[in-house]
Length: 208
Ligand SMILES: O=C(CO)[C@H](O)[C@H](O)COP(=O)(O)O
Image (cartoon, rainbow, N blue to C red):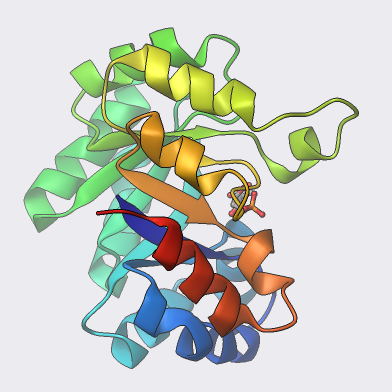
């Protein structure tokens, strides 16, 4: 299972600081949607230039114009680009077409999708590399939230998936046991007193 750090920060300076702290311990470096909105797509190029040996994930959360938006991120240096799983099938098809042209990959973000497992199967048929079974930051803040809901939906999907929704040292083993391809960790790394140590601990909990 790969480990992905989600950099939900506002500035490229903060992102570069964080990525340099944790790069040795992660496989994929994600530029969060707020970072891309604030800094622009050039931030993707800057992170790729700083970490050419790492896979770079642009969390575009594209909801329309899939081919155009994915192409913008791939040209900037992204290896993975997200499109909303809730988007129109044609939006997802367009993003996948762009990925094929660039030799890169589309990930479907299942945030806000009600039946995550069923939609994950459907968008996998459309050609996405894998689905991010995801509870967003606002859903995580709701009373009674448990990451187990997304872990269970990933397992039930029967297709390749990553898990995002507050992955931390207490849940990462369950994420791997469910069969995830990638564990996405944002807050548990970014908000740690020592982000490098937090990423290293997460990495150490992954068995292969
Ligand atoms: O895409 C996101 C929010 O929309 C986050 O990057 C994702 O949820 C991972 O961060 P965290 O581990 O803090 O949940």
